[in-house]
Length: 392
Image (tube, rainbow, N blue to C red; front, side):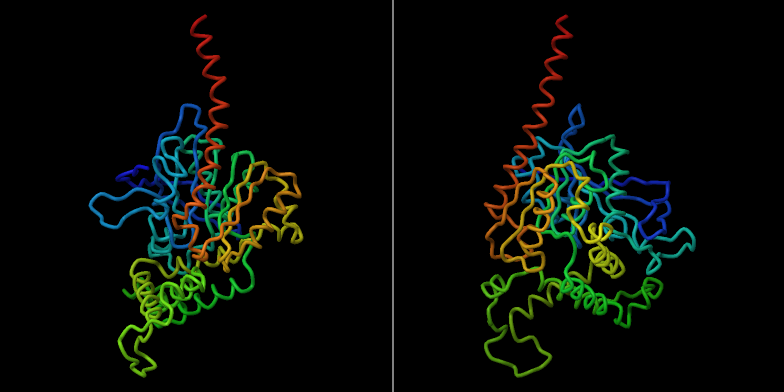
């Protein structure tokens, strides 16, 4: 399997406002995106990758001159990899409200000339899908061969099949859920309170004060990171190992290796992620619930979907448990949809969708083989007719 090599982010500006589910709108805005592979002549081999909470449009490849700049799904996307860029034209888009190149809270509010901060409009999964659809329009892609995402990205993939059913032939929904449980909303709320109660937050307008609410971001990341791992994986990696040879008998010093690891993750996160973006994206997670408009009936919500599906879950993922994936599968089966389901016995917890598990990658590879075969089957008759016409 090869590497995509160095890639270059692209940006596309949209002058037309984006109407939002809340009733507000986002004025002229910019989307950051990357593409890998080649769009075929029929424009039928495009695959959209939807990112999760703290990821971006940088799905695969590396940036020239930057060490450790591999895309967040580099093990899955590339030449000869499960999502093979020798066969597919892969698109990664950074969603509005993020802090990695698309218009977000750090950018200037055209109405005030100051950074949006807490005034950035609340965005939803449905808003992101509509923004992505506009980008595809500009790229001349009427229909996707597939849309794929894990976690929050899986919610976007699912939403694509409801909002734009005729524009998606296949949807891969990985380590996701049809909505958040009360426990998940609770974790998000604790993380948001950690940020909002940081003295440096200044009601979300900390840019004007030249500060960053790093303490809140650190705690938010630590909370989140715990939920991404399984108990087994934390036990295997850290157990009760001490950082020093002896106990310090201190309530404030780091005693255990797991404490050191969490603090490291929190420190690193607070240096690059935007606090307002964290609030926006976790709220988008909370709000996603396509069944709500159908009296809680997920089957009714998915009745519009015409895509074929692959749903994948992981046994030790307690944040987005297999049970939640099976709810999606059952709702699709209720509608007679074409759906395949894989429950991977993996020890890594929610983060398993980002890792290179051979069974998981094997399932995804096999599914994309199916997608590629369909593209070839549709393309071949057209080529044959073209050659007959040339001969005539």
